Image (cartoon, rainbow, N blue to C red; front, side, top):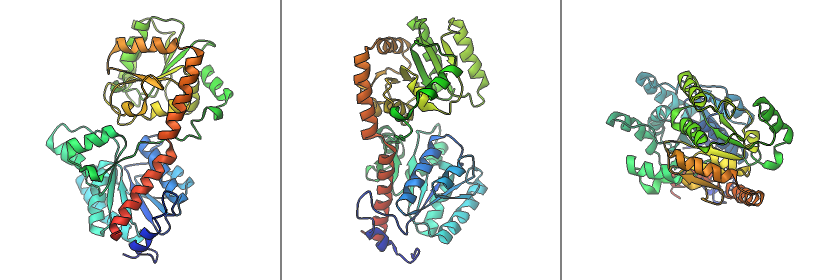
Length: 404
């Protein structure tokens, strides 16, 4: 297959120079349902597209559109709108030929699927066009019956399957039979320019503190995350009640995304425990770096395993102590006793005890923890590392395609 005058063997030869190698003459197509603003999948798509362009490659993204399309254009990627968000079998079937035609017209080398419905169309289109198909497995996905399991299984059919944590890699192998030699563990990365304590101004932190009515001098405990039951907001409130301190302020940072009944349940629980002045639900925040910086401890209380848990790394990148449920991705990102602490999922007493411990850390212990937490994030979980490893997977596939 000829692409802009270069065949696959020529392309592959240019990719033997390591992570700084150019991607000239290479076109990568990422596909996901939509480019909504703020989601982790969408953010990762933009970050990888930017890395492809920075190495001289061509980055295409197919989705049904959305608020983050402008981010793709900002980094030099091209967006093509197709109804790949649809789970209607007829639409999914029609998308196969649409994608096959697009692959041929644009000279696509690899198609990289990030979600199940578009992945099915992409899988068959890639086979039809004779190009490699790969996936990123972002979560565990519910699989209550054989039909649902089969629907999920397309995410394990890539020539390479990126798992965003070792936890997800194990899940892939155990539940979908993905062979270990096809799985590549690439942790999600944090933008270290954005989450850098030296770059978060006092003014930004002050603006948030004022908006959230936080009194000077009181320790702040923050649980970020959308308001949904499995994120553990109810047990967090119970733990704060058990802690019994009135000299702290606690924030639930995240929108309800239409879950108004659950939000009312949380508000009622706060009132039931007499915590109206202690616990605040402050909705979505556009400046999470400042939100972390005003926090004395950041909590992830998820009752189900997080596939990765970017919150914990963002907080550590800013030197904040973290406390998290001891399962899923948290076991890979938190260094127990050095950058944070883990507690048994759902254990209110254990969470309360850890919060008390962290809130009583000395200034010297906090400084030592901050140094280790920042180093952990920078050395192991940077956006640059994630992008470099993903581009390595593209190179690996192209070498294989070329018989190299």
